[in-house]
Image (cartoon, rainbow, N blue to C red; front, top):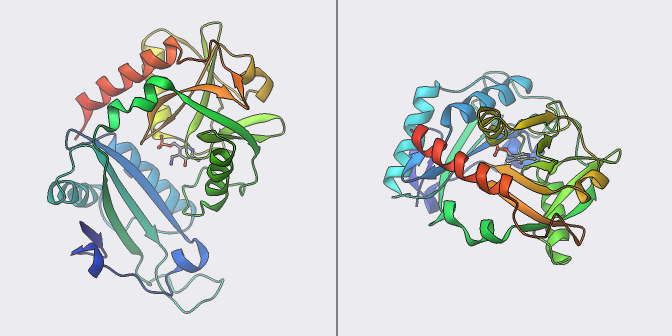
Amino acid sequence: RTVYVNGEYLPEHQATVSVFDRGFLFADGVYEVTSVLGGKLIDFAGHAKRLERSLTELGMDMPMTEEDLLAIHRRLVDDNGIEDGLVYLQITRGAADRDFAYPAPDTPLTVVLFTQTKPGLADSPVAKKGIKVISIPDERWGRRDIKTVQLLYPSMGKMQAKAEGADDAWMIEDGHVTEGTSNNAYIVKDGTLITRHLGTEILHGITRAAVLRFAREAQMKVEERSFTLDEALAADEAFITSASTFVMPVVSIDGTDIGDGTPGPVAKRLREIYLDESRKAAV
Ligand code: PMP
């Protein structure tokens, strides 16, 4: 596989980053994951915009124009023959002698991109069955709106879910669901779509923004507000969204079936609309 590192396209075994990189030592970096369907990027502009916001919040500047970033994405997709898959991008504050204080502002940022091939990403059999989630306390830091590479807690949550025979975890704060370990969380009750409002408590999902737009265009009733775990357990449907799973039905929470324990009609419909519309708009 060819990867991109600091201006160069290299075979993956030749690509290296310093042991002093602040991403490695301090998780001082941000990332994006953009999906690829039919060789084209889904919602690239949304991801580029959020990347810029994450960098700005941490006092870093976009190291290149959106156009140059798109060119790198496209070249990696082409060179690696990606039909369906993902492009991962990571930008860290660069390499400097270990110190909590940030290095001099002229320290070059570290920019890394690589692809992952996922044949049949959009017609995964998992979406037909739905996934099971468990609930865990949300013990992450308070700025979850910044897409940093500090993913240890979400990683622990996924491991716990797997150990308990589930697929993923929803995180709970003050009795309310914040989001999934790597996705936004939704319920449907009496025809109303409910998902947590934006704030510092959750990542502002690019897929979330698109799905809410499509739901409103389809005249669905949408409420952006927090909901409790009890509300979720009593919901008609539940689902998650993310760039890599699109719209994915959730059929059980903490061992309790949601609705009849199969993917619900709203989740199925939104998944179809999302995939159709995003493919049309892909670049
Ligand atoms: N929340 C969290 C915590 C995430 O890690 C992700 C995906 N990286 C999302 C939500 C979904 O965001 P997006 O739709 O932009 O992939």
